[in-house]
Length: 411
Figure 1 (cartoon, helix red, strand yellow):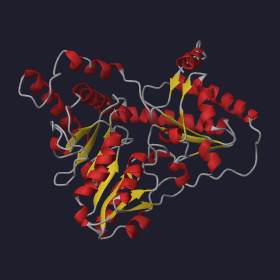
Figure 2 (cartoon, one colour):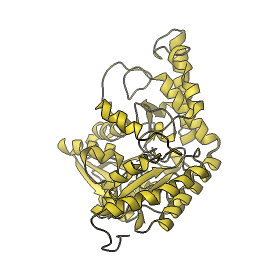
Figure 3 (cartoon, one colour):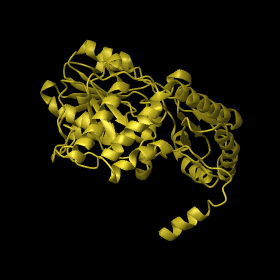
Figure 4 (cartoon, one colour):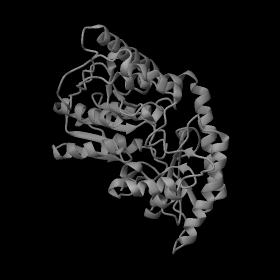
């Protein structure tokens, strides 16, 4: 196995340029984030934040500072409303399972979006096994939640509604404020959870303006370290812990807090928000440059998701007809361009992206899709290089395909 990996890496030698666009799955850390974290591994604040000695107090202070900073960035009223978790997957599980279990006397129904992330879809299946009813709210062809269907589904038996603020695959920015109003008009006691992992640091975000009761945040999605995320829980909302053990400073997640990663999350947040307008404008400009370049230069391509201000500024998802997405990621990797195909979360189980099928894409359109994400650190030269090598990679694979042409794209 290691020998085969060595051969793959060897095949990438002598690359003219490298462009990393696989921010959906992982991210390189800016130097400032790494430098902010390093001292907390061995020089300062490496104690357990619940212990009453110098190093424990220092760790506690750093965690509180990060909670306060994140609370400020999302418009939360208190640092106590921010709970750190090992990542957005754990935060989503906690939001869904913990909230429903803690409030099960209120009803038996949960509503989720048809294009919810798998960290909501799979826990929903667990709730069904426990006897709860889970209903999926449909979306239109650009991924926007149907408010009419949501209104029809919400009732006095509904405990929780969960939807993404910005979809991780197709970038659709959902009308969360309107969705919250819609369900609370039907039942004021319904709790609303929004996954903002792909919105935090990229679109304006205020929990009180949106009216949400719970909100998921991710560190690595804003170029912070992997292994840490957060769940905002509005004061008074009951959430049941999913794990039991030593309780630290985080009331909803047991164990010793990872201070270095939490500090890294704070630094990445600071970088994102200190130049928020400039950063997001830069991402939108590069995003549109890539989208327009691909659609103009390569025939038989389909943009998945909306255009303009209703799309996350970093998101590019395009289907290439008569190409297999995984083959295209390999072909591009050999040129130094790193992307993912379809939903990276589903590759291991060989299923098509439920998000793309949820907006009506055909199987061949789903399997030929590429997901690329932009950061403010990408350059014009990076995008020019991508637009130079991508058409050649697509043409090479299409020339090897047994079938080309056929029915009109399902746009």
